[in-house]
Image (tube, rainbow, N blue to C red; front, side, top):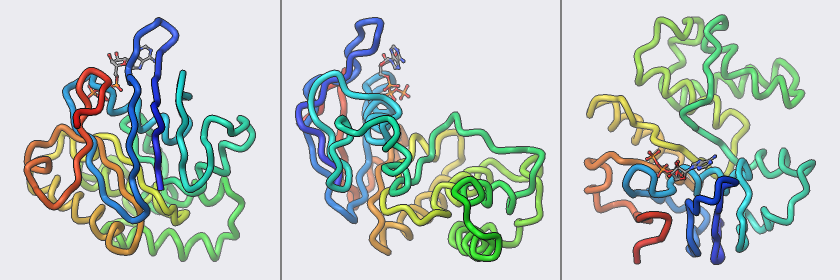
Length: 217
Ligand SMILES: Nc1ncnc2c1ncn2[C@@H]1O[C@H](COP(=O)(O)OP(=O)(O)OP(=O)(O)O)[C@@H](O)[C@H]1O
C-alpha cells in the first residue's frame, strides 16, 4: 500500500511542486499518474522512493513511514521497490545479462542464484533470446524492457515507472504496458506516470490526475 497524507513538496528554490496531496494506492493495484508537463508527476514518484523528501505531510509505503526513515534505512525501503526512471543509465560496455545481474551483485547474491533470477526477469520481459546482446544493438522498446528487467530482478512488491512508454511508437508502447500488466496480474503494485493519451483513454486503469501540483478530484 502507498498512502500520501496531505503531502506538500517545496523544492529549495521555493517552488511548490505538490500541494496538500492525499491518496491511497492499495496493494496489487495498477494506477496511472497523469497531468501536464510540470504538474508534479515525477516529484510524486520520487517521494515514494525517498529520492526526494516531503516538506509537509506523511508518506506510507508498505506500512513504513517514509519521512521518518533514517537515511541509512532507505536501502531497505528500496528493496521492496522496482524503479524505472528516465535517467537510469544502461551500461553499454556490458551485455544484457550483465546489466540485469548488476543489482543482484551489489546486493551480494551468489552467482548461481542470481543467474537464475536474471534469466527469469529477462524471460518475463521477453528478452531472454537477447541475453548476450550489447545494449547498442537493442531497439528503443528492447532497451525499455531491459530497464524493466533490471528493476524487477530483485522481485519488488511495488513497481514505479516514470514515462516508460515515452519515445516509443504505439505498438512498442502497448507491448511495454503488457509487461507491466503481467506484473500487476501476479500481485505487484504498479504506479506509472504517463502522458500517453492512448493509455489514459483505456478505461481499465485508475488514474490520479495532477494539475499544478494538486490532485484533481
Ligand atoms: N529539483 C528541483 N528543484 C526545483 N524545482 C524542481 C525540481 N524538480 C522539479 N522541479 C519543478 O517542479 C515542477 C514539477 O516537476 P515534475 O518533474 O514533478 O513534473 P512532471 O509532471 O513529472 O513533468 P514532466 O511531465 O515534464 O516530466 C516543475 O515545475 C519542475 O520544474
